[in-house]
Amino acid sequence: MRAKGFTHASVHARDLDESVRFYSGLFGMEEIPAPGFPYPVRWLRVGDLQLHLFLSEEQAPRAHHFGLDVDDFEAAYEKARGLGAVVGEGYFSKVYELPDGAAQLYLRDPAGNMVEVNWPDASTLDRSVVGHIEKVGEGDEGATLYPRR
Image (cartoon, rainbow, N blue to C red; front, side, top):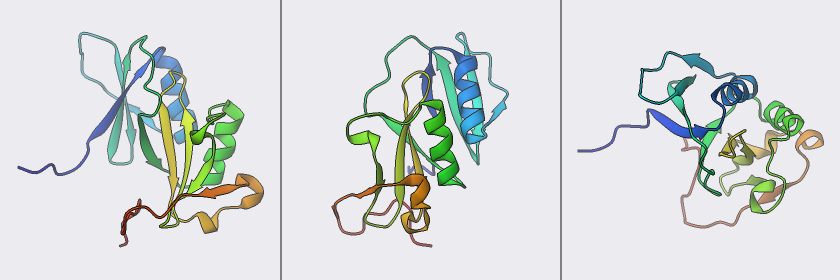
């Protein structure tokens, strides 16, 4: 038996309406019907995948995250900064360039969940918008965020 792919990621929300507004407003996710579980949930569509939100007062794990591919990295960066969603300090507060040339930015949603925003080619980014991009070390041979097509 082998897994065939991912269907969704699931994260908690302290306020479901606020989290739906965040993901819909920042990333253009579309709310879709959710089943009638015995606890409050909201489901969002992102491309062919889904983001499931469930109501919880728990703290978000510090480094756990999911990654999103966007169609306009600079717009996501500026909008996230305007919302105060960009991680403010520490390792995750920087924009990184991976050895394969991909760019990464880290955000926190209203419940504190970390979201990694990805872009395939850091060299195409407008540095007057994004500013400094820090390079990540080489690591394992063949490591790539975006498999070569």
